[in-house]
Length: 380
Image (cartoon, rainbow, N blue to C red; front, side, top):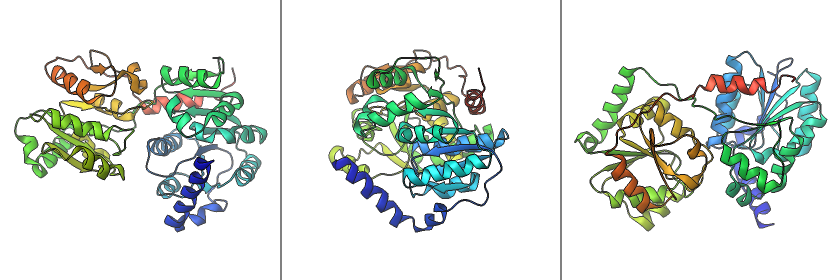
C-alpha cells in the first residue's frame, strides 16, 4: 500500500515539474491513418525510455508510422513528440479511449515496452490490436516494484513476448509460474549508438584528455557509464577506485541523488573523475580511452553500455549474478566475477589488464533488432 501511494505521489510531483506536458493529454493532431501504437510507462531519462525513443526513430526509418503513448509527465515527452505524435494517458480509462480512437484510424499493431505496462495489455487486445510486449525487468525489479500481477497479465494476454536475455526469461517465467511457449522469444536489443568516424573518436578522446590531463599520462583507465544509482553500483565503483590507486577511474552519466550519499559513505578518491552526462559523440571518446569498461551493476537485464563498449573494442568486466551480461561476455571479450563485489572486481581488473582479448564484432545491429520486432506481427 505504501508503494502505491508513493507511486501516485511521484506521478503528481512530475506533473508539477513538467507543466508543459498538459498539452499532450489531448489527441495529437499529427496522428496518421494507420500505424503502430508504442506504449512506454516512463518519461524520465532512463534506459527503457531511451530505448523506446530509439525504437520509434528506427520504426519511422523503416517506414512505419508510430503513435506514442506515455503514462507520465516527464522530460522525455518532448523528445518523444519530436519523433512521433505523442499522447499521455494517466489512467487506464484514458488509455482505452486512445486505443479505440487509434483502431478507428486503422491502427492494428501495438508494441508495449516493459512489464510496468502489463496492466494495459488486456485492454489493448480488447480494442482489437495485435500486441508484442517487451519485458526488460529482472526478478528483483519485478518484486521491488510490485509488478508480479502486471507481468503475469503481460505474459498471458500478449500475442508475442520478447526478452533480451535467457536469464531474464527464465527468472520471469518461474516467478509468474508461466510455462514457456512459442510466443516467447529472446533477442538482445543491439546498440543504437552510432560509431563515429575515427577522426571524430580521436577528437573526442583528445578533448577529454585535455580537460583532464591525468588521463593522458600513461595510466590505465577504467570507465563506467550510467546514472549514479545504487542499482548501477556507483558506490562499488568508488570503492574499487580506492583499491586500485594506480589506475584512473572515470564515470559518465546523469548525477542522481544517490551520488552525494555514495561519496559521503565511500569518499571521493583522488583517481576518480566524474564526467557528467555525455552525448553519443562524447561517449565514443570515453569508450576508446578506456582500457576496461566496468559494469558494476548489482542487477541489470542487458545494459546497452556493454554492447557499446565492445563496439569500440573495449573489454568488459561485470558480475555473473547481475543479469544478462552472462549471455554476452566471456573470456574472449572480458571477465566475469561471481558477484558485484568491490574486491572481486578489483582483482578482475588487475588480471584483466594483463590479458589479450579477441573482441569480435557482435550481432549488435539496432536496425536488424527492430526489423525482428516487426517480423513478430506476421501471421504464422
